[in-house]
Length: 228
Image (cartoon, rainbow, N blue to C red):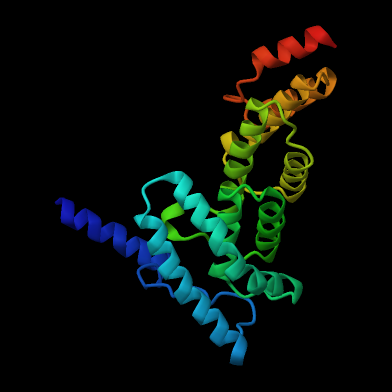
């Protein structure tokens, strides 16, 4: 039997199982009530302005200049985003998502974390395609990077790292094991620095449970256990 005939048989079988399996599926309409009237006009204006600002940022070569520009731009968008949150809107809002990213980039960790967790709770927000990840994964990476800088500078990451881990564990996000464990490990490192060896040991165990094959806390766990 020729290869093309074999493919035809497979396709025929699939069609028997599901007559619509080769039919293009329409994307689901995003949930949430869309803005109307003046609110819709403002939203569209800010979307257009953000495209211009994003192009300006892309043209900048130096990271410090990008961060400076983002800090300068944020006040133009924050009133709209604050209203979006305070009024309980739940339509997909790319402006709010981009503002969340810029807040992390500029080190506004409290505002970034608060907004990010709110956007995750809404459940229908997505990052721009070039990020190639969902918001929980992005936030896990961002919190890790910020907490790591705090650790290098011998500064605490509390209460923000603590809050993120608490929400992550409670919410049960579908994260890759390496992503799920990385902030548990980071918390263990901060606790070790602070001399809280029992708590450090406990977080090492949580990290190993989340990522049995690659948590990478064997040495830290041993040191903490020796000092308990």
